[in-house]
Image (tube, rainbow, N blue to C red; front, side, top):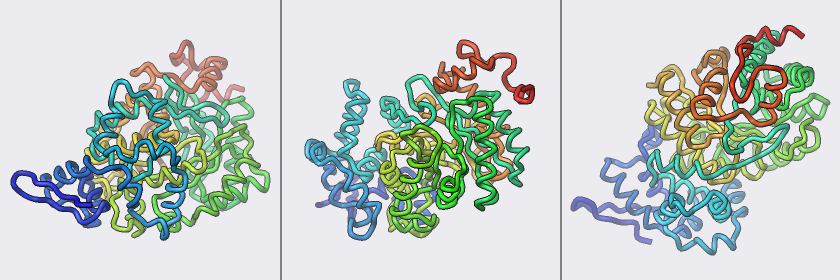
Length: 455
């Protein structure tokens, strides 16, 4: 098909769908590093104009990595509901945008249509949306999942209690867990990024966090963010884990850089269903981030937004409890500043929800990015208004092991208060029972971790 338009007396022509998608993307330092960005604002606008007229079937027929070459492509294409696809294949990308934003289009209608979409279609429509458009469309979609508790319900906002420690000190991590719990952080998961990825260390941290959950009868789950093979080995040997974690990406080659493939993840998913102590049925926790495929030289000359959408398509295969875009963690080489980080966070949240996965965000930045804590708080407010399922919680918003800046334990409490949101229902009931919350408001006991040392 001809991909051409005339804008301000200049003709712009694009050689392929892949090139068109890349040049229609909002400015990202990663795409510039890859040499695939539009040469000017005018060319970007021309690409958006052409993309708006592209029928969805063209995106189905032209994935950015060919079906025969990539298992992520095969997973996404094979999962498409062909009956629903047949209903929408002649829609244009611009038409899909208008339909998503129409007042008459409901979340349930969107969730049905999403079963006929590919990642390329989802990324394409995101490229035509403003930040407010992304929020408005995402706000309609509620993706609810259940492990030990229920995430994604209307009016709720969860928080991952992230008690990382520079030496994996069990006592230090336990103290951070208690501090987070005292603020109401931990209903998403008590999830630790370990320094030591060994079986013995992972097992020790799983046992400690499980002991806290059992002793205090907390309706939540634990998870150690080691490589998936270490976690599976641990649970098969009896270690108590509530979720199984893995970082995932949008191409087969990028996943191989993480040391995984579909077969390995299929086996991990089966193991989670057999060995996790939680009732499920959703047992998987995935993290993603724009730029990961490029950093592994596994992007196939496609832009980072499309590859991020493909990561969600891969993750959906495993019915995850939650997916988290670690939006600013990858660094300014891929997202330069607060403007790009904010845009990427809103894009990722929208695309994850449109894919059909329970979506959260690590609203964060590294210290060499052009961003501040105020920028991250702004992003957290925008995402909360858009219906984001959960954020991270670390002491004072400064991770002592990963050395990056994100949302704090008390930020979740502030966001809930600001936007009239509540913790996950089972967790709120637990907080009410032990006296940390009353009628949706933290009590005077909240924020004092010594509360948990009195039993």
